[in-house]
Image 1: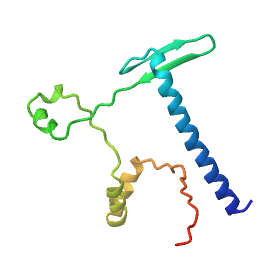
Image 2: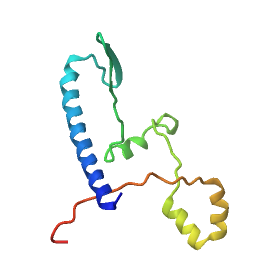
Image 3: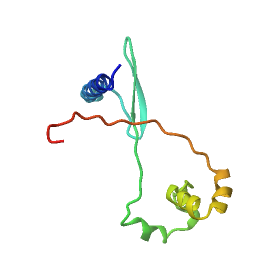
Length: 128
């Protein structure tokens, strides 16, 4: 199959997904008032043929303007904060290029997994 045909199939499928996602969101908006739900939790409603679970999560983040002043005013062990170690990719690449002996040690403790390929396909316009 040619690349042109595959690209056309891809763009058609992508448009269909977008349309179906919009339809799902419209249906969910109509269903929500008819169902039990709990902010910050989940509730299940059973009908004759379906069990419908609604999850309404709450996402918490710090107010970047207020948190620094509050943080210093409370004991360290009482702060509702998690510290997450994650790989600094730019720093890792710098080590690889500039300090290969350090990179050799560090790389033994780091796992690298390839991500899923992503595509952007747009029709060519006459201006291009």
